[in-house]
Length: 269
Image (cartoon, rainbow, N blue to C red; front, top):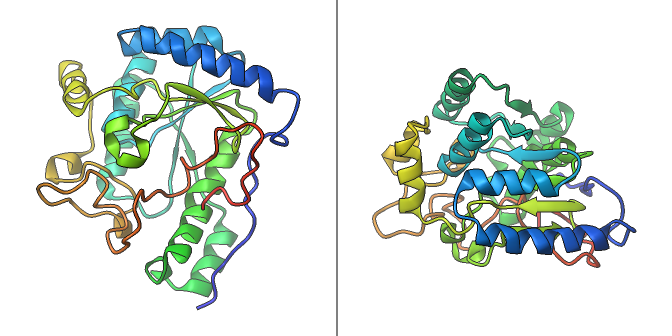
């Protein structure tokens, strides 16, 4: 099997550019500010007040991101919402996208991978080549997710996500705000400290549409060939790439360094 590989390019300039130091300071101040606020709506208002320029919110249409979409839409906060369509989503995920746009009257920007890159990847590795090795799987994630993410974040000042510390051991220290050296912008996680019970209460109380797969044992939902329901007692991320034994499994979207002086060679590593 020949693995398709090409260097990923992150949005923005070099890691040591003149803008990284002030961005790092803004992120540190905002991290402390968000920790002192109680509600998601208050945190979004503080984020919008602190950040000049575009704030881009990447939604996977999972329950965490649905909570944030609700708060953005109902407060009319000026935040750009986009999602990555890898070409391999569950139908339930696309149903959630359709229902969400209809309920809130918002347009969620959909980013697709480059068709030529996908064709070359499948030609070289096979239709399910990502199951042969961790490296092959990460190459697939690179083409279908990381590069479209990079394009979606071009020109943005900040990147908003639904990461929570409870989601996995590897995310247990997720800050509210930090400088992402890989993406060259401020990364924001406004529900980083939320528990699952708190999240579910917020969703139920606000009648927020959620992916039907959550009720079928899918706490974390990605591409259909790479996601299964978890068994009782399993880690919340156990259903992602379940054939791998690697700890802290990630697709490459959230593995960038927060050190402004560090330039990663491969954002999908």
